[in-house]
Figure 1 (cartoon, helix red, strand yellow):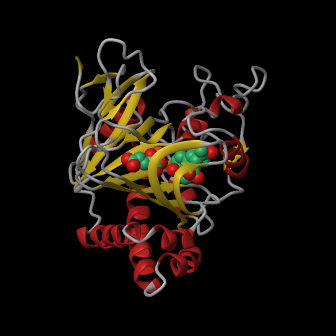
Figure 2 (cartoon, rainbow, N blue to C red):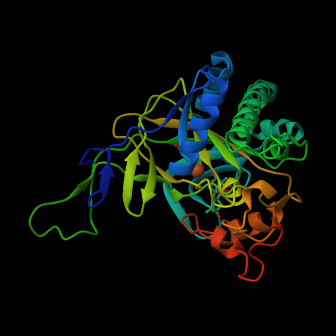
Length: 342
Ligand SMILES: C=C1C[C@]23C[C@@]1(O)CC[C@H]2[C@@]12CC[C@H](O)[C@@](C)(C(=O)O1)[C@H]2[C@@H]3C(=O)O
Ligand SMILES: O=C(O)CCC(=O)C(=O)O
Ligand SMILES: [Fe+2]
């Protein structure tokens, strides 16, 4: 059903959809089937009863709130984002802009401890402990979800995906995103000969897919996240601070030989509420090879992608704009497709 709603940019279509919800306390076999279905259909689902303690979440949320409330000059001590560190209104190196400020951190404990000194001058260990506690908990949840996915797809080696992010050399990222509350703005680039047209929301984080394996996203009680399953049609994601939203990333699309879809998403600003999201983006070690396990490649579904390393993919990601698609650049040639099939 098509609907119009205030969480919309002028001229765009919104679709009201009941997005999949996975209750992790339910029967394991049922849960794994539900997760696989959600990843095939949307590349996106919500997890409830996830087991991440509330105090761990609230501690990092509080640290994030305190950091973003600092004067700009103090926040700049943790910047510029290169790509790690503090960034404001622009990201990447292709001129992408948005109504956002953010803090991007590598999840390695040493890296967190070092960065924390620039984030909190007076109490770096408070920030560092909050971030490390959060990372440990969400990494555990991400591994559990990846194992359930393997089980649901009947892949015998159930840690085939999870061991990449459990590896001590993983390249995972923790990212805090902060979106200001913004009032209604007149849409200047539209024909306003008859009546002014207003956008009630502005783009905070523009449309993109996450390059990594799996993203676990949590936000405060402010709307803004949207996913797209069809070009130009957006599905608003209702906020739920007690849950995690899970995004399939490009690497999981590649490792499932295209069975799961890497979800395109974006975040808009909210009219009345400041929004803060915390994204854990689980990634493999830089030199890990990305390829689908043999069970995902059959005579009926030949290898879609050539083998490549995460380092190679990441380099491509950073050479492109936020909204660019990248996986098609790693497609197997027609001769190569099917290599490895008995
Ligand atoms: C414009 C860019 C920012 C980004 C790197 C990129 O060149 C394209 C992908 C962007 C993205 C989106 C998901 C994550 O938030 C992120 C950290 C990532 O791995 O890819 C960001 C990058 C970034 O802001 O550094
Ligand atoms: O803030 C959000 O809801 C989206 C954040 C996001 O897409 C990201 O950090 O990659
Ligand atoms: Fe994202």
